Length: 615
Image 1 (tube, one colour):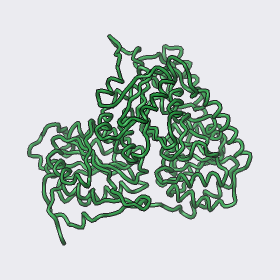
Image 2: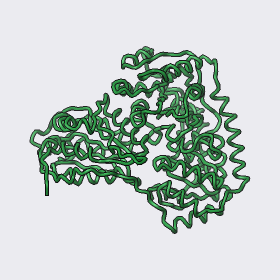
Image 3: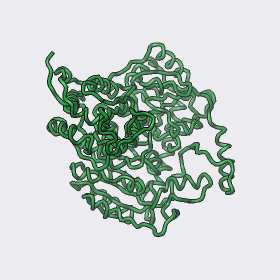
Image 4: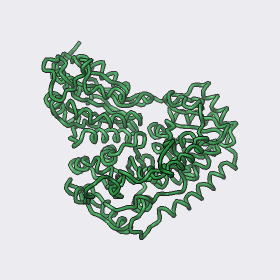
């Protein structure tokens, strides 16, 4: 057996560079690069190894470990899980900073390879700088925090252990059912140790997606159930996009006359003007999609986790006889809430299900109702997004301005707060992947870093990041990375001077405005943050606008710019689209000295009666 002597770190980088993928007939590197912030625990060995492979496995320097990992996660999502990135950090806080991003990837079923440094395997220098010591477990380190948020975790304490670890890692990262973050904690002395690795370990390998076909009996049962349906309804989740099943979904819905509601992750799986697309579903849904969902007797859930925002905390689907068909590549999701499972790849499953339903269409009256509801919703929505001269515009009015200034190929990126709800209702996505929302973990701070990852995945598309002031203040450092890497973003920063979304929720549950808007916090002086000046200090172009008309002009200038641009606009923290949407289960205190809370509790108990229990 022919071998080559390398350090463990060198073996990792050589192995990663040899992994390929094929997309549209073109062979590409599976790993788009490695994000790295160096420190003790990875600068010596991993730093040396990455430098040696820099021409074939590019290294990108982040400004925050969580931020760079968010960029890697977004890159994978924008690549439909066909490409991915790795991230390496030092031990201690450098490593634990990535835990939140690992959770984002875990919840959203996205591949990212995390390579945090770890303590010495030989334990001779213990305790080393930044080492977490467990009084009762000598094998534990800070990296054990990754275990709950990793699909696969391993700690590499000998150089030869990296061979089975990387092979297992690749199996997980490329598996459509088990896909998620992989953490390989690299003991810092082991990274530098040499071993005679088999040359075959570094042979080029091309990974193609596994398309699981449905079981014949599951397919028969699903088709039989759907054929009996009078009011069938499709829920389109993120798995539709991961599977590149958007064309198959459009064909399926058209052929069989089925209305479709989109989850946050599934939005853009159908063009907004497709006749079957009723738009957003659930708590942040359109009146059209929710009206059909309430009556549906068979719900075909395609590639979705059926999160509470999708199901209205399991109070949305009100038909007492309704059944769910769970078309999902992962049995864990396909069988939720007593669903009839159809375990399969979304595209393969839709194609075979369509064949099994040959000649069948939903009742014409049901399809007509969907069309009427969609027309009615578009008329309603226009009132919220039309231009305004208001001193403080609403989020929806800002969204309307961004939409009017956008092109069909643009990608809008967002994550947490009130904007996701308004975007879910109002944004009109024309092309697949044109709507990139991190709402599985609803992670504040994802927006700018995520936008960077989206841009790196497809530089040909304009990327528009919409972010609130609270989220911007949490994490903005990868704006500097976008400038440094020449990956242009347009960032629209809506300043409502606090956490407006949670303030509204606080008031809706009977609470007094407290500790959310800046004016309602414990303060000596209120900060007057100059966001435009801050963005400029990070190297971006920036400006503040005072009207919707000025915003539209600024967006045109941003499109023509060569570097990232941040546009700041003040908005109203209280105004929100009061049409559409659905109740969401947020527990209200059973007793309170506040009459408003007691009244909210009564309303809450009434709403609980609509929840479906046990199915």
